Structure formats: C-alpha cells, structure tokens
Length: 378
View 1 (cartoon, rainbow, N blue to C red):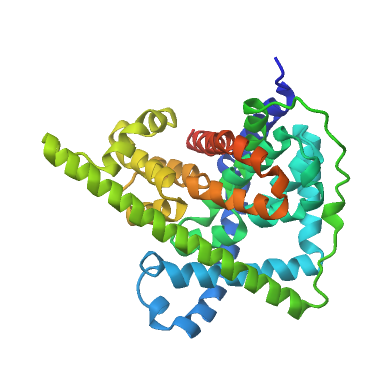
View 2: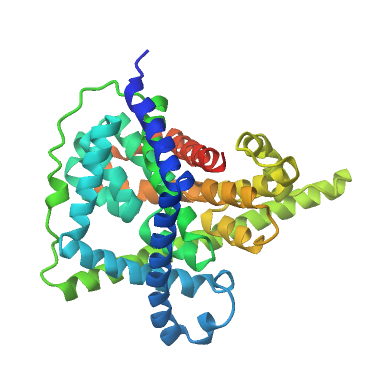
C-alpha cells in the first residue's frame, strides 16, 4: 500500500522505450554501433601504455589469459581520462543533465537520479563520492535506490575492460542505458519511500574538481584507479580460488554418491534454467546460458564475460544477445563489498542502513538486468 507506482511504471516504460530505440530501430542500432566503435578505438589507446610496461604479457595471448595487466592498464587509463573530464567540468555537465532527465521522466528524487546517471560513467564508489554532502540526509529508500542502480549498471572503466575481453560494445552500451531507469523503478517497488525526504539541491553537478591543474587531475585519477584495480584483482583471485574449492568439494560429494555430473557449474546452471527460459532462450541453449548467469552470481562479471567470450561462435545469435545483456551489470557478492566499503569511508554512521538494504538492492539490480535481456531478446 506504500508503493508509489509512478516511478515503477515510468522506470519500466523508459526501459522499453530505450530498448525500442536502441535495439529495434535502425538508427538506434547504428548509433550504438558507432559509439561502440569509437569506444573500442578509445580502449585501444590503453594498450599502448600496457604494451610498453608489460611487453609480451599483453602483446601475446587473449586478454582473458592476461587479466591482471589488462584490468590494471585499462582502469588506470580510464581513471585518468575521467579525472581530466571532471577537471574541465565536462563530466559534471553530462551527469547533471542525465540526472535531471531521469528525475523529470521517472519521478525519482534529484539525489537518486543524479547518482544513477553518475553510475553510467563513474562507477559505484565515485558516484557515491559525488553525493557525499547528502549522505547523512538520505532515507533508506533513497540509499536502496542508489545501491540498486549501481548493481544494474557498469562504469566506463569496467565497460572498457569488457570490450578488451572481446564483448560487443554496442550490446554493453545499450544494456547499461536500459538498465538504469528499470533499476530505479524496481528499487521503488522493492523498498518504497516511507520517510520524509529533504530537497536535493543538485549542486553536486556543478561542484568543481579540487585539482588545481590538469596534471594534478591526471595524477589523482591514476592513483585512485590503482587501489581500485588491486582490490578488484584480489577479489577476483579470492573468488575464483574459493569457487574452485567449492566445486572440488561438490565433485567429491558426487563421486561418493555416484553422481558424476555434480559440480558447481551444473548446480548453478540448473538453478537459473527457469530464468533463462523466461528470457526467451531456446531450450537447447538454456543450460549454457544459465551456467553463465550462475558464474556471474557466484564469481563476478569478469569471469562470466570471459566464459561468454570463450563460447563465441558456439551460441545462436539470440542466446548470445540475451547473455550479453543479462551479464551487463555489477550484481554479485563482491559488488556488495565494494559499495559497503565506499559507504563505510564516506558516511560511517549510515553503514548499518546500507548493509540492511544491500541484499534487496542486489536483487533489484539483478532483476533490472534480466528485464533488459528480455526486452532486447524480444
């Protein structure tokens, strides 16, 4: 009874309209293909620095075989680029206008809309930093919405990494744009507003960079990405190792029971089969696509996208399309830790509220990604 249906309705409508424009209409597909080609060309510049530093580690073999130098070099390059754009007020202008458009169409608050727009370019931690002055005044519903949009979208640097892994940039761009309004709508459905909200002035969009010149901006952008990339790689190593241990335990249990098929991939694939069927994947391809969704939930997007890239040419076009759109997000257990870590640093007094709404926000973000896959696959 406390659900405001207007943001829910308009969030889903915006997702369908964006899907119609970006996936179904010819000019939309051409625009996404053009943007994807430009982004791929931009990502290629990161290879120049990585090849100079790492040499044969990146010049030979696929990016999936050289994850550490690929992730590190791409994130450092894009962190520097974003910091320079922020210094010259370009980023604030783009984010401010996107946030205003979301607030006007979907009906969410200015802070929620501004942070959702920030997530499309900056990522979860940096988007939280932009609303730091308002963190103590956010309601639980607003925190839930901010976290949900972070789980449903990918930042520019992560998008660049996925492109390095061989994913189609036009799919990734369209999926991230479509998932943002849907995540805001589902967030208001899963956790409706029940508290009095304070007005958001939106002044964060016009805040100047603290850097005094472009060289300082470049240095700050590079150094901030080093720590973030190190955390991502550490999380990646720990998760892959932990999941390998769990898989070995399941295989051993299956050996004792005479179930040679038992394993983590088999279990994850079976759990997500109903969802892949609902997204329109053919029955014959459901197990492979469901396994990718399971890998994303238990590991992270990098591992799932690496396995999708390994299946290139083996999946039909529809299954490949649905998989690419469904995996485009930041919805896994490791992402929860990233967001909670950011909130712990920015507003320690709100950490309890953030931890309370995080599981529900993770579900809302995941549902938005799956809805995007359904819209794109129709």
